[in-house]
Amino acid sequence: MPREYVHIQFQRTRTLMSNFFGNLIPHTFFVTKGSGDSDLEMHAGSYHMALFDAGISDYNIMSYSSVIPATAHLTSIDEIDLPPFGSELKTIMAVAHGQQDEFVSAGVVYAWMYEDEDFNKKVGGLVCEVSGRYRIEELEGRLIRVINDLHQRTYGKYFLGELNFITEGITITKRYGTALAALCFVDFVHPQSTIAVTSASE
Image (cartoon, rainbow, N blue to C red):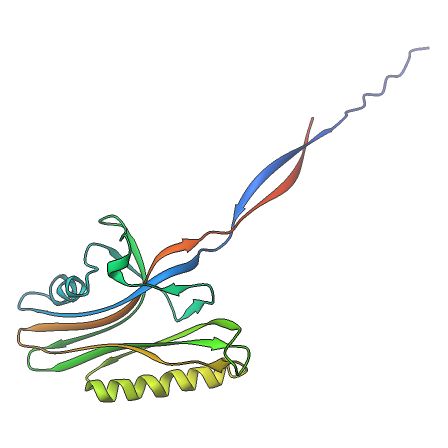
């Protein structure tokens, strides 16, 4: 009588350690502003000259929306080593474009929010941008209304701290003109965690 053989396949498991990276958390930022004009072009003319005036024309500008982590801190553009030429510069920026004889302006307002009315426990920062054909006084007034409205409608459970303004305006004497104001982030925290991943192998 023939024997019956049963083939049994064994699986071995192995554990690999994998690194996972979380989202970038902005850490250090500076504020800047600038304006410029050009008879030739807007983007490759007045906008670039406004970036040059603001000290950030060496970088590829990336746009963020309007919040700042609680751990971020303000510095001066003169106190830091700026990134290499051609690198990305992540910003929260207001930009206004116009044409000859117009006055245009751009402004950013930011404020820290706190959990308590004694302003001891920081939650994070709120930033708003406004741009257009506003006189500087009108621009600041609109920035105040915008940030207060946004705070009340979305973060009303927190206490809003002191308002900080960055504004710029230009009366355009050439064909095109640009004004800008910005918060610029220069370094980041990159959270990392190591997780054991188990895989099966024959």
